[in-house]
Length: 71
Image (cartoon, rainbow, N blue to C red; front, side):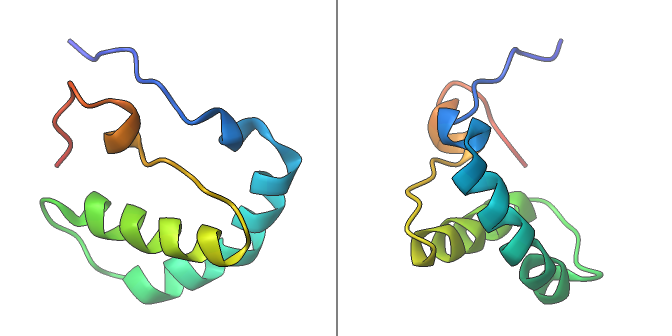
Protein backbone atom coordinates (compact mmCIF):
# COMPACT_ATOMS: atom_id res chain seq x y z
CA UNK A 1 0.00 0.00 0.00
CA UNK A 2 1.39 3.40 -0.99
CA UNK A 3 0.88 6.10 1.62
CA UNK A 4 -0.38 9.57 0.77
CA UNK A 5 2.79 11.62 0.79
CA UNK A 6 2.96 15.20 2.02
CA UNK A 7 5.02 17.64 -0.01
CA UNK A 8 6.52 20.94 1.03
CA UNK A 9 4.05 23.68 0.06
CA UNK A 10 6.99 25.73 -1.26
CA UNK A 11 6.92 23.35 -4.25
CA UNK A 12 3.67 25.01 -5.36
CA UNK A 13 5.27 28.46 -5.68
CA UNK A 14 6.53 30.08 -8.87
CA UNK A 15 9.82 30.87 -7.13
CA UNK A 16 10.45 27.16 -6.49
CA UNK A 17 9.41 26.15 -10.01
CA UNK A 18 11.79 28.70 -11.56
CA UNK A 19 14.63 27.61 -9.29
CA UNK A 20 14.04 23.95 -10.20
CA UNK A 21 14.29 24.80 -13.90
CA UNK A 22 17.72 26.28 -13.16
CA UNK A 23 19.02 23.51 -10.91
CA UNK A 24 17.52 20.40 -12.55
CA UNK A 25 20.24 20.30 -15.25
CA UNK A 26 22.86 20.38 -12.48
CA UNK A 27 21.20 17.48 -10.67
CA UNK A 28 20.83 15.54 -13.91
CA UNK A 29 24.50 16.03 -14.76
CA UNK A 30 25.78 15.19 -11.27
CA UNK A 31 23.71 12.03 -10.87
CA UNK A 32 23.59 10.80 -14.47
CA UNK A 33 23.70 7.03 -14.63
CA UNK A 34 23.72 6.54 -10.87
CA UNK A 35 21.23 4.30 -9.13
CA UNK A 36 20.89 2.34 -5.95
CA UNK A 37 19.28 2.15 -2.58
CA UNK A 38 19.37 5.40 -0.68
CA UNK A 39 20.36 7.53 -3.67
CA UNK A 40 17.17 9.58 -3.32
CA UNK A 41 18.53 10.94 -0.02
CA UNK A 42 21.79 12.00 -1.66
CA UNK A 43 19.93 13.69 -4.51
CA UNK A 44 17.53 15.43 -2.13
CA UNK A 45 20.44 16.66 -0.02
CA UNK A 46 22.10 18.18 -3.10
CA UNK A 47 18.77 19.60 -4.29
CA UNK A 48 18.27 21.21 -0.88
CA UNK A 49 21.76 22.78 -1.09
CA UNK A 50 21.14 24.16 -4.56
CA UNK A 51 17.72 25.52 -3.62
CA UNK A 52 19.19 27.16 -0.53
CA UNK A 53 21.69 28.92 -2.82
CA UNK A 54 18.63 30.28 -4.67
CA UNK A 55 17.19 31.54 -1.38
CA UNK A 56 14.66 28.74 -0.98
CA UNK A 57 14.38 26.67 2.18
CA UNK A 58 12.90 23.36 0.99
CA UNK A 59 12.01 20.30 3.02
CA UNK A 60 12.72 16.94 1.42
CA UNK A 61 10.06 14.24 1.08
CA UNK A 62 11.80 12.37 3.93
CA UNK A 63 11.58 15.45 6.16
CA UNK A 64 7.92 15.95 5.31
CA UNK A 65 7.00 12.26 5.77
CA UNK A 66 8.86 11.05 8.84
CA UNK A 67 6.67 7.96 9.04
CA UNK A 68 7.72 6.75 5.58
CA UNK A 69 10.91 4.88 4.74
CA UNK A 70 12.44 5.96 1.44
CA UNK A 71 15.13 3.94 -0.28
